[in-house]
Figure (cartoon, rainbow, N blue to C red):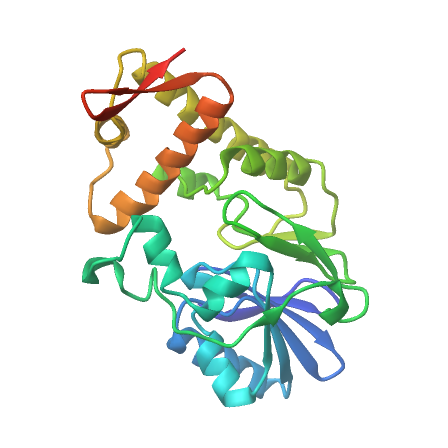
Length: 291
């Protein structure tokens, strides 16, 4: 774990739970994400120091805690710049927004931990002008608000959290999604991409990404079909959530409640907008029903 892998003349990634990209411009290093906590940041700095690389900036793909958790430590140690896109910048500077958004209110202590709540870091606005020459930013909305990936001049594409490995899909059943419609469009675009190497954050680096993108698409459509099937009888959100947890053999806790719960709400919103579900208020309950 935390081994440096070279995938291009000047492009590397650090193999860890959420893979971290490294692009070199001379002796200056640019990170793509920073891991999940201070310990991750410390291990990253050890790798940089061992190779004599100067950390110039961190480009955050999105603001989930496991991608920005090393920001504060690395910025404090190196005075590097941190850049994040759109709403992701706000979440990076004010990380309490992540558990608050997921829960839908002020999060209790069970949700205020490093897996959902990173330390604050000072971020600047990410656009093409701050990237090293030849690096390209790739919009990847859907998983989170303004998530992006990057293509380095070595034609290595970092895909952040826009898809999961087959093993992850099998283990967790329902992966986190903010905007289901945008997510499907992103996966369809990724399916058509070409590169020397693709580096997803939560799957193995690969020369071909299309089969995994298709698997993720089919998983999303399968969950949507499952929900529409359940809603042939009118159900509340909590009833739908329980049936999904039971049918997929998932175990409820606070973290799974907010992650899967937020995702299911996103499915319900998308299915309603697509005309496949209706939402009706009866006896002060919101009921979802298949159209």
